[in-house]
Image 1: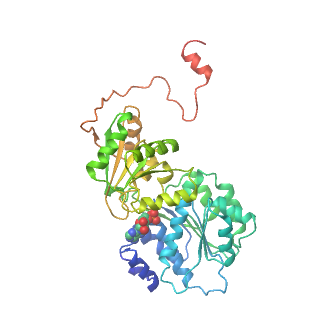
Image 2: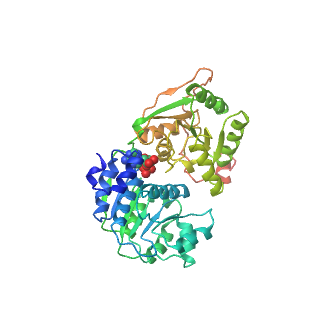
Length: 409
Ligand code: AMP
């Protein structure tokens, strides 16, 4: 469906054209008219569905219709779980408003960057604040932000916020923003916790659900290759050479492993870097830019990159280690085949992780052929039946239990 039906202003149409947005995605089709006609919404949508533009476009359109004041007042507050997502939302706002005669002023409020610069921009007057909650609260504590004119409150990737123990921070924010506002919530899933949070924010929202979880997963060729752990580096090099991959995102389970492997690949002449939560904000931004501009061909990352990152043209996502949570599998592979393109996602399997991979397949009704590659011999062991009860996640055996098992107690 083309964007024509939304009756958007000329300036927005020009921005859509410049960004080659020709057809509205399903979430945009549903959400844009609802926001334009001032509804609160609870939308269930994945990253990669076009959800950012689905709120940015109508908010900008509504802002345009308002009379401008001499000094800009904060009318829009968007909360997002990570710094990267925050910066991407900010970019979408400025990108979409690039042809406005009076461009809205947009500030990213995130940790890891100078608070002074952010305060300065806020004091000068801004229309839109896109923030992570920690830094936002620091600024609120300093009484340096006037949110009394707020009209639009957006919570993006609400399910991701729960991991960060966000409920209390939200209470503080809700106390100081006007009660009369439009609320827009986006979440990939609606667990009880997300619904609890949503109910604090709005009770009158229209619910929008974009059915297919795997909207663009259809464009991803999913493969699974057996390889012994010690041969994974060699297999990765083999695949990169065979398929001439120019942009590969490799998921590894620990920060340290991303550092070690990227170091080894650099030593072998690859343009590789690591990406994880211990990097400074500057390092993160710089590394992502280099990866986007193809100055880096391989990015070894923890799951920090599995959600919300827009990097077009990633040829291949590799699950060097499988994700712990089955849900992260879909988020990870969704980093490739973005915006209608195709891509490949390859999972490295061995005797230890095969059962876990089968769980992922079961959850998403997948049946991915298990391959072996010539030159990478692998012996598949019979899946051993576990004796006794399954170990409970997060519950370690006590010394007493271990002794008991050995018959020593
Ligand atoms: P999101 O779901 O917000 O993470 O967006 C995913 C990607 O799709 C981003 O790179 C957007 O720039 C792109 N995108 C969003 N909407 C459209 C559209 N209607 N046409 C083409 N690309 C789009």
